[in-house]
Amino acid sequence: MPTLHVQTFGEPTAPPVLAVHGVYGHGGRWRELAAKHLDGCCVYAPDLRGQGRSPWAPPWTLEQHVADMLATMDEFDLSQVDVVGFSFGAVVSLHLATKAPERVRRLVLLDPALGLDAEAAKNGAATALAASSFTSPAEARATRAAGWPFASPDAVDQEVADHLVRGEDDRWRWRYQPESVAAAYAEMTRPAILPPAGVPTLLVRATKAGVVRQEYLAACRAAGVAVADVESGHQLLLERPTDTGDLVRDFLGL
Image 1: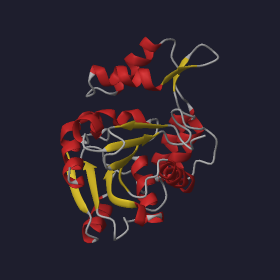
Image 2: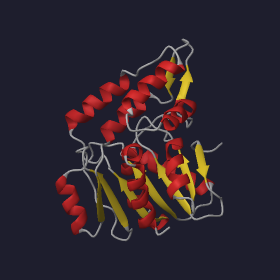
Image 3: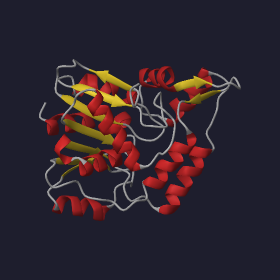
Image 4: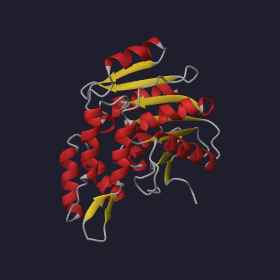
């Protein structure tokens, strides 16, 4: 049985890219980036443990997520990949590159949620544990559309199709384990680490989000990390998909 549920986009013989989503997410959220900006690659997009269709069993530590990524790469016979991670997925990607730098050719960190303030993490965990439920897919869709004002209707429809599940109580919920998301917020309070020196890295900051701290940006620049800004809220893949996609594509040399 595979370690994680993985969606693939592109030809299996194309250069591999491992794409790691953030909290509340799933691998399907990389579909548009893969189709429009990484069409020369095969994008492997796993659901993180505790989310989507992957196993929900703990532990939900960064070490376990990294082990899951390495196991997934082994299952697909991927000796080395480019890695793109968003938010908490960027934190997982960074720790993956630190644990096994020889397996990461290039690294892209999209608004990484590193060194999160303890109070912000506490509030995020509380929100996760109070998971919303809905009477119908239509109600869930309306809520998601309101929360994603910049997303296309097609993106919202795809989210409902990919990520909504009906429970035994006949209510509808997004497909994630609330405790795993709460644990992720705790993991995001760990001290921010720099990418390993031997792995070319691009950090893309969403300027309106305030997630990436100025001192971390300065440390990255001093360490030779490429840094780019996108004028966007945190969900830069939804809000500014073209600008974000172009940066990723150019850095990966596609």
